[in-house]
Image (tube, rainbow, N blue to C red; front, side, top):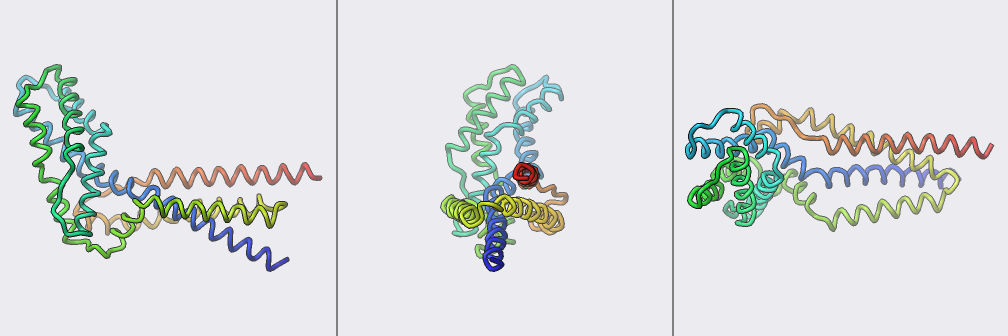
Length: 266
């Protein structure tokens, strides 16, 4: 009996670790892209677009420019542009190829820029201006310089590059989900009466592991700032925090359910 309980506890611990690992794999790429976007690329890219507007138009006030910049930063196309650029940066580090962003991504972001410029300035861009906007994004060297800077500090065998590659592998995520489900089935089959207790251990421990991960990342922030060559860095860990909070809420619900179940039996 004690041996059986020991196995169930071990399975519960492994389940918690797998859930934490899955949380990291599901959020790592988004965290990386959002962090570099929020701290550096969004403002730098939109400033170039603002400079383009100032060079091409007169009688523009600061409110219009500020509104345009905010709309650009909030656009999903800018995030997609940064996401592919960061993907390409990591890919180039692994393969030692030259930096390149797909034409489709550039076209989508260029069209968004044109639409937002016309909306905020209430003016139309000529065909030549629209082409100039696309050329600006296509020939933009910001991501290229960033890629070269990172390439000099991170090699293809580094933990960061491997972790980023793993986070993009859906097959690995599916395998982990299958193992988690198998573990839940194993616990339920071997301890139907006390399975809620083991599920409580899993959710509580996995939530704790995610909070520990948040603390570790906060301690490593200065190191990451030096690595990315950014003076002040704020890491966007909201997704991990939401997962940790959700697991904590599930733990609370399981605890309440366990108490109610025990009271009902009495």
